[in-house]
Length: 125
Image (cartoon, rainbow, N blue to C red; front, side, top):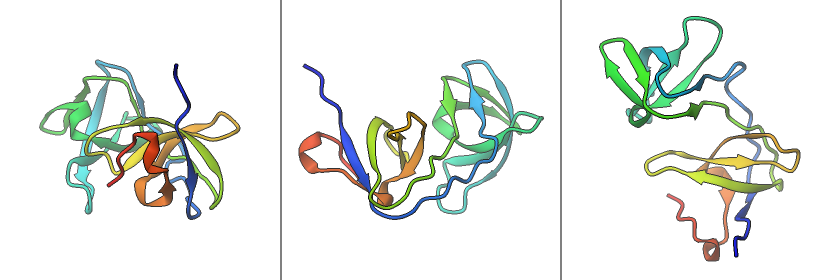
């Protein structure tokens, strides 16, 4: 039997990306600078309006060109302290967890902004 894994937001979080970058396998992006705190994340854009931080593990990088190896979305989820969220996906080495709020909106929330009870099987950093 499956059960939902839930957590609680511990501090206010404001979304960073106005127009997040959403990739399908094979999509090409321009690769920019590495994140100052997370060197395996790069600022990427699609050559249009969409841009966001993308982990190296998602891309095959050659020079300033990246090709997505898997689906990925850079959307960050705004949330307020006390909000309940459903944990959707946790990637190894990712500084955030993909969550869904009670309105069905999905996006990344930083580990340090979440309280996830230890009996739920999700290790946090």
